[in-house]
Length: 334
Image 1 (spheres, rainbow, N blue to C red):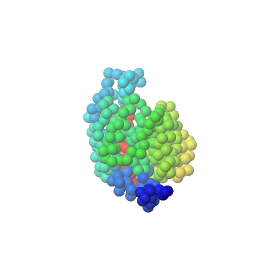
Image 2: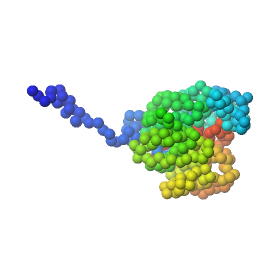
Image 3: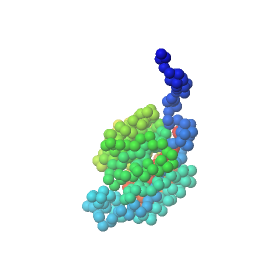
Image 4: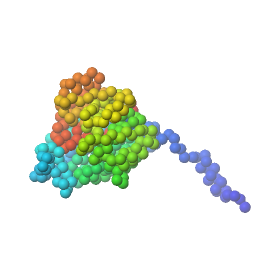
């Protein structure tokens, strides 16, 4: 009696000469272009920006009811879970004008804009697309937003990325909390994640699982008090240069930047605090809100940085600047 059938023998021989191929990795640019149409993903925060996810503020903002003023002067409804940080209600038409001008500027810089298919009902912070998607090598991570005001934005982002064919490498799940403003690339082998009310250790661990497979180290940074995201204190603007607020970053992180060869430009007390929430569209070319002091602008200029300023105060009044309003999906390597 034969130890195997003829069909079994043929099957084994066939599979032996047509084996599975683990290499090159999923995020290999040539493979991504072949099977996914484009070299999706980001491995830095400063390479030439190619594709970005955005959302024009829309009717969802009208959930804000200015008759519901809180003790500290902002507006909100604790039961419904929404709040508005500004001391005046939203100017939707003005927000749209400023957002439209920002989109026009990005297009002039050669950036392709992908608009969110739609905002979920009442998801009035959907224009801050940074928080719902993290661009990594080979695609994106869908985050899990921490607050009730934002939970649910993940659905529309997922649908949009699926429509355009961007690979989703992970969706944060379980008790993980993590938002895009909590994450930043330092270089292609090092990233940082801030632990705060909007990012917990389980969120860091799940993001780290994706990054570790790509040989990337994830540094944790604990923020102080009720600060939400690291993108209010730290912005990479070149492979070896960052804009920082040293009063709001731990000493060990500043030392780590130095060890990695990252020079820093420190903000000045006369600066609009939103200038750190900017966007590098290419190495040493950055878009920031109006209000940077001459002190800071001079120091950036001395480092060869081209600064483009935009009026964005009406969008910022809702809690997010130019960085928050953009979620990069494709950047060039540096």
